[in-house]
Image (tube, rainbow, N blue to C red; front, side, top):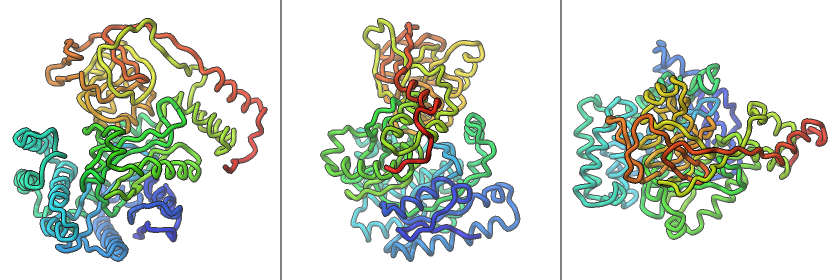
Length: 534
């Protein structure tokens, strides 16, 4: 089995059908000279064989991983699992079409106890090393061992409370070391020695990523998005870069334009001293623009230049995951941004005006959108909202409150519109997203995976509503202190991030100017000649 190695401008182009869209785009970015951490990819074709436990699949997987790790060691000058200059990797999924958050990822693979000591030697940062170890244990035990994530989260929350700090980011080196040791004690009886065997970790993580193709949430998503003809996922193994090394580092997601409204301005969420799962899982709130500017004053300009370059290279609005390691920007992946229907219309019109794409290509991108039904909504005499959050997907919706996917499906089956209200944005709730008219969460960011799915489904979404407290098991919530029960009417404005109690009146208008431009393309007023260069 051949592998594709990704590093620098000599990287060969590769097909998304063979290695997945994530790896194909990484290879493209490497050839553009963008700062991409070295990586290799195992092909899509191995996915079905691993899931089916075919006789030679395990050998092919092991041989591919060993060859790829040799490439990364030669490229980085580090050694996988080493006690002096350790190489740590992420193990990521990647189908031919983007499935944000639906497949598994394992970070910090190779972080054995020996490698943790090696990180301390090579970086002089004990806290970074201890934090990578505990993050590996959390990621590996949940994804590979099937361990209940709530148990580890409870131990983390208990330590945070005991230390009297706001969150795990504020724990000192000694406390993080204790947390890593406590988490290891909780999970090691089921680990079969994997926690101290870097190669076994890598094999198990790759197997788990391939296996996540068959998960219920992935199957549900493919059905909703008509992706059932996809053949499987590839596995991309990438050198770790560390956003959790202090306040001069961080992890984030950036859109080259606003995927909710279509506005021509980047949308950036960054969590300082963090790794990528902190952002895309929706469990951590992004840092403020002021905090980011103080910590990383050059980031906005540098990232803005990368976003413009990627738009020109890919000919579309991009969704980019990135890490900042001690002030150095690394690009981890890019893909076409999931967008609301109205953002799709504005993107198409603006990209034609900017001569990035030709009218016939814009029409192809709008082919699946019913433009006759496309409207922009607003509230009539709404008054003051009862609470506010962060608008993650535009539009207005009114419906009956539900607090889990099953409750949302029951209400929707009775013919009622539903507002799904959740503590955080979890992609496991995708079946509830599908039937909901709108989505609200207590925490999370505009760039979390579930917010992306909400935009793709065209659902208004508000995240980070601190005034919302959801008690899922009790089937109720409070909104700014006011009780909300299952079936109560709620109205949300995903543009402004406003929430209202009750069923408010909604008025709709059409984006006539942009629709007229599309009509002109169709009538041939603008010749669909060929793609235009910038």
